Each structure stands twice: as structure tokens, then as C-alpha cells.
Image 1: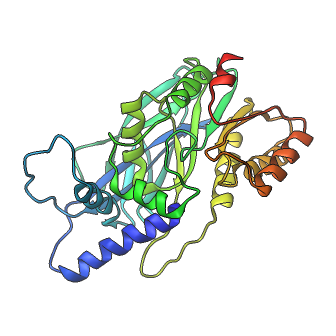
Image 2 (image 1 turned 180 degrees about the horizontal axis):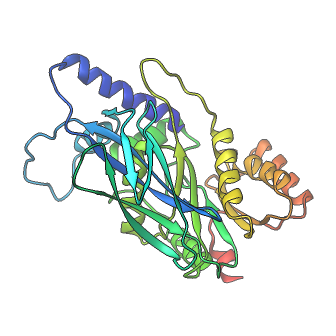
Length: 327
């Protein structure tokens, strides 16, 4: 479903370029993503791009209009990604790829845990960009990997039309974050256990999602979003399930001493993806938690939920997380 949203937003942006081709992009800037750690490295992540200059702003309305929200969402996709940009930080360096993405790996100090910020420079810029990473604590009991859409935030991703409307016409203040999801993530985090987010939302929405998390009081964590590859020369290259599965693999390999709780919802293949992760990583998945955004389970959900049960992995399924929290 998110693929259709990004395609639609990208098409709108390209349409505006055609209608008003003389518009120029602004200076290069870093779109920072939350980094994470492996046993020996800090992985800093981000993307370098340029955006369309903003028009002089009118006095803000107390409640932005649907049209204003729509234009703001399209603007997130109306960017130019910059390749071969030199990134340097604390003696390490790398270059952006053809779509502006970069991963910069630093040696991991043993004595630092929690959130840490690093000053990084690109090309010949004198002003550093702040890149942030979560350094997993050795005191963590387990880790958490959670989906976002309809697991934490109401998007109704199981319905294409509803998902498009909710995603393209809302803003960070209007998005409904389930209060029990905030409680669940907070309880599982327990001030020390790392939380990672795996979603098919495109990387263009990283800052937007982080703002939603901040407003709702959701625990922040490294996000593994999807490269949709929207360009004139490139088509979609990854499916929803493959992306989530590989992201889970990345998190587990980065934290080999931790077991993980997987949180998702029915209606988006999460049960299937999580079952396959259990088989790929024996003894690493300690529990699965699934929200049911619809009243009943379809045949596919029931099939994969039963297969998870057959592995002996504990699983909770419910319309809310209340019973799990009170257990």
C-alpha cells in the first residue's frame, strides 16, 4: 500500500516539475536517519539531497487544511538526491550512492551506551551535520522490533483508498497513535531494551514519522524504512515482505547476544514475515505480538499464525494491547 502512496506523491512532484520547470532546488542538505550499533561498529546513516525552496509562508492556521497537508506531503518526495558526495566523521569517510544514501561506520567505544550524536561533514562544508545513533546497552535483556502502520499508528493500510487518504491528507498532529501502543513500547523498552522499527514506509517519511513519535511520546529507535527507487531510470525493486525480512535479519545480526520480541499487525503479511524470521533465527525470537485492525482474521493470517504456534513461539493476538499489558 505504501508503494502506491509514494508512487502517487512522486508523480505529483514530477508533474509540478513539468508544469513549472524553471523552479530550482535549494542547497545540498543532510536528511539524517537514526543509526545503530553492531558488536564493533557504530553505523551512522542518512541521505544527501536538495529540496525545492519554500514560498514565503502565510500566517499559520490553527488547523491546517487538507490541501495544505497534501502539499506538505508531496514536498517530502519532491527532492533531488545527490550522488558521490563525500562524508567524513571522526577520521572515517564514505560517499553517497546514486540515490544519495550513505552508511558511515565508526569504531564503537565500549564505555558509551544510549543515544550519541556525532558531527559529520560533507564535501567542503564547514558546518557539521549532526548524526545520531543508538548504542545498545550491554544491560539490555532483549530487543524489540516493531512494525509501524496499524501496529502503532492508525493508517488502515489494509484498504488502499483509506490508506492513501489518511497518509496524504494528514499531518503529524492529526495522526492517531494508539495510546496502548505507546504504553506497550514503553513497558518493553523499560529504559534500557533497544527498540527498532521496520516499515514499508519510504525513507522520505523518516523525519515525519519521528515527529509523530515525538508528539505521541513513543520511544524513538532506529528505523528501517524502504527504498522505493522512484526515479526516471529505476523501478521498485523490493517487496514488502522481503524488505521487512531483511531488516529483521540486519537487526538480529547486529545484536547477536539478544533475543527479540516482534510486534506487528494482521492484514499486512506480518505473521508470514515473522514466521519465516523464526525459522531463520532459531531461539532468537522470544515472542510475537499482533494487533488485529480488522474484526476478523482472513485465511492467510490464520494460516501463518497457526504456523507460528507450531514453532512453540509465544504469540499474543488482539484488537488492543490491553490484555497483554495487564497480564
